[in-house]
Image (cartoon, rainbow, N blue to C red):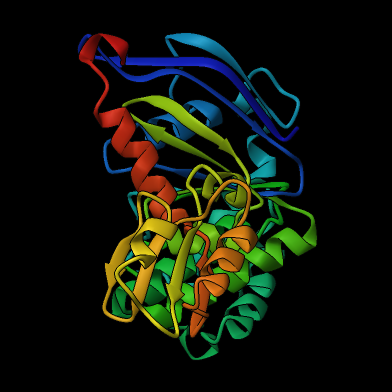
Length: 303
């Protein structure tokens, strides 16, 4: 495993911001830490990196029980962005690499190549203060990977980016994974996690509420059936499941455990036929809302 954590706890002012979180991040995977604002995602990442010490629990990072011992093998994009505004883009990238042990000359050369590959070749010699917010954020991201880390940790990396730069960031994350790096990132935007993550954890109220694949998360909710009959009638409601709801073009109900085949046979035999049939699996967004909503509904003493 690239990262393991058992029972991580962090208190601020007597409040448990992180309350017994377990995480296991496989090497070479893209792993998402999902949760609403204030769930404890950033605090968890900082404990995993050794930026702050936990009040309880254990963690390892790239095989080290003291995460800072592996810091030169890690790239980190914090939630609070920050670059020296007077630096040129290529110098900012090289400087961030130098902080991780990369020599200045190699860093500058890689910076030029990476900026061109990211579609920012025109900004190579531009000072940070002259770049747009999205461009500066991509420069900082490139600086976090210029030393070719084994582990890349990104805290809310898509925040503030327009759709074009979000797409560039997704491509960069996939390229780093293909290079062999492990990527751990936090987000509260489900679309990115659904497209990118091999595995994910959902944190709410300081606790880990779910861990598994995207499909595992979606499977926590039942699929829904949208059925349109060829011939409606007053008896059709008696043939459908009890939760069936009428819609403008038909009926909507939860997919029965035994499947939908026998139900369709009964509907056809009764003369209703099939004009349209659609089975929809729930998305990660719907699963996230349910999991986080259940956590919010817990009594205070259970949190």
